[in-house]
Length: 348
View 1 (spheres, rainbow, N blue to C red):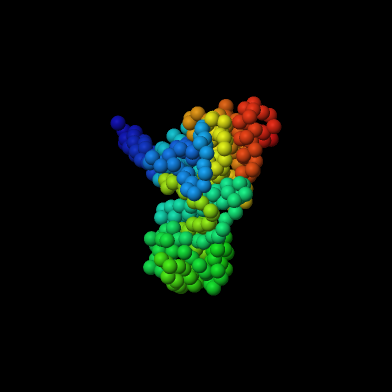
View 2: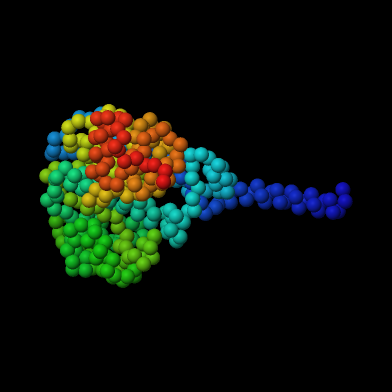
């Protein structure tokens, strides 16, 4: 073999080796795939997922499935290429779900906070829909992040009573008062711990998704007081997208009859205390998950309809803008499964 041929051979082998090695290099993308579905009317570890104490509840049937998306972190080039051609997966830039510079702990904390908020908002929306008003509210610390500036000052279980001298009676008020300072500035936080009042001066830090937004590094929950207790047992799902299905489950348990008509209904969507339903990410993967779970109806936030109709599915895609609309649609379908007067996602 001549020198030139040897050189070409060696170069080809090296190129091949580099190309193969490159397939295992990490890439700045993540994969969304259909995740588990969970029946909000079912049980978790033998206990009801939604438990209501101090108020009459009614037996029901069927299921109200909340849908999830599984995210594949630390994707390599080979995995990205494989997932790109998989019909049930979506490959998206990681910066869309992980702001640059954010740590896994910060992301976990924010996802946990979003889930906590979603449970509280769902409870408020459901009870408001039923005409049950809260008797009061307080903001309770759920967790203090390991690298939080509030470490050593606040603890889980503390009730935040004021920020900067302004009384706090809800999470909106907490966010508003903390938002009055810039990241790096100090806020005075008053709290109640085991019945004893205390205060702490906390230096805020920037949020991972918005460097201009200050945070004190805690997750909180808004404990509205009602004449009875609603408890939602779920801890392995992050984010706010289960809010709508939580609210529907609460309404179903507190009202006679079967909201689903005994069928399997799935859905997704954020919800606020007023019952407004917001869009979420990964709608197509959630529809696939619902389809595999045997659902016949999927509740789609209005803002996700354009993406939902691109799916080749036999599911009935019901467009939802608020909790009242979702209840109206389910009540109509329960009485007449082939009803045509139900808002449906359709191609523009």
